[in-house]
Length: 175
Image (tube, rainbow, N blue to C red):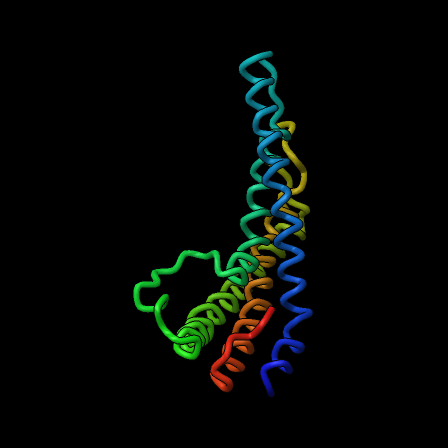
């Protein structure tokens, strides 16, 4: 598979990860405004609603769990790059491929495996908040436990194929 073939093969997966990440990134604005409203109502008017406070938690979890793969795709994740930054494209592709195969893929598969029963149990009873006036969507929130490794697996495929293409050609894949 040539350099261009790798880019074409992974393009739909990469686009899906990026679209999901960009979409949930906007939830940070909603979360900020909602947090401001919660504080204003509580301290300015002595009013508060549990569902509103829980909504901030739901938004935060959604942003983190869905956008993690996008951060990896954009190379915005945490990396100790003392021995990485100044190296060739081929070297970096090798390191990225090794990390993807040895760490990201097993982690994602493990998370799907251990999270499945946890999420299924929440769905079976349509788990709701234990707080009076809380959101009845805990089952949906817990579903993010499977969304995170799902998107990470998609991005792992993209990363691995791009790294293989770079290792073969010596040139980075254009996005």
